[in-house]
Length: 112
Image (cartoon, rainbow, N blue to C red; front, side):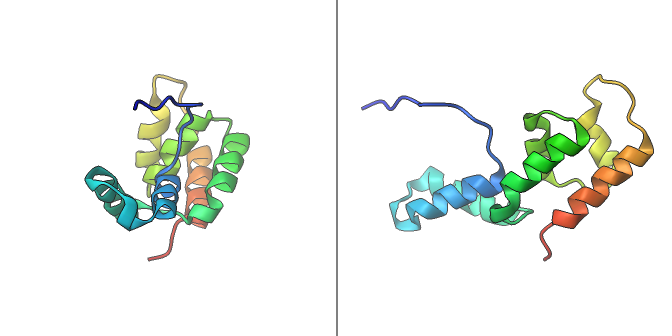
């Protein structure tokens, strides 16, 4: 039986991890287990803060939600890496703004 999506939305890696964990590992198929393994290794922020981070990122830096989600998924660690995400053919972004973005990301970066 084919399932129909009720709505589509962009989600972060931590949100995928949380959804898969909610199903329960014993209920997951092979693909879902691989996805859970990936999300466990590459989650770079706490899942309980993701919605707040995305909302604050969009409002503070005037980027769209998709850009914010990609930044949270990758959590770039340098100004050069941030430029890659925000370059997209748009105007040049001042270094001071990039430094502010980096400070913002560092504030929420998961401590290892």
